[in-house]
Length: 98
Image (cartoon, rainbow, N blue to C red; front, top):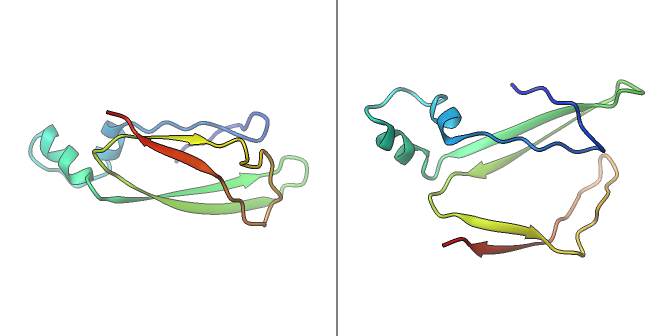
């Protein structure tokens, strides 16, 4: 669990491959561990509490691990704000980072 204080309603979280590997059952050798991350699905869950009201909003999403590196860039038409409880759509450009 990671606790953060949001700045302007957002926060960046970085999780290293070593940290992800430490959550897996023990295997022999680091290289072997990295292979076991391939195609694993990680569930990212967040609970955000509004300080003024104490209201807590929860959400989750999934991420699939891959050895291919992609670069995602938000397009200018992506909204920069959202309303709690409503669906948010993001427009991104994905390129392969070779």
